[in-house]
Length: 79
Image 1 (cartoon, rainbow, N blue to C red):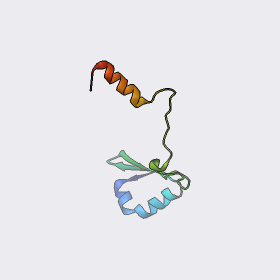
Image 2 (cartoon, one colour):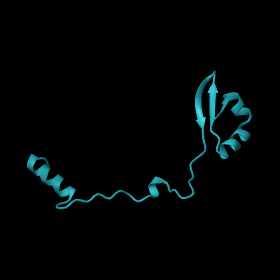
Image 3 (cartoon, rainbow, N blue to C red):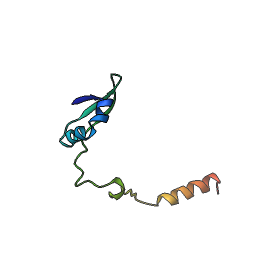
Image 4 (cartoon, rainbow, N blue to C red):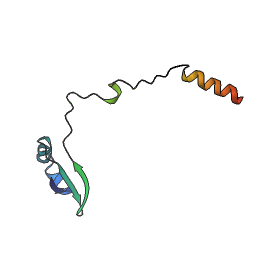
């Protein structure tokens, strides 16, 4: 892991991001304290955004959830 100051990051951003592309992780310091960690993105060639992935399907035997809710409401007198 390479450690740089915020000023160094600003001055040498292009070269530092080249290191990140090659797999290096960079720890950024401000006033001697860590404020950020820049690391390479995991391989995303085969991954899809979460909204494109198939959703979890829930199923139960018997009546559906909406029927159970309506029955509960009827028993409690809620309309």
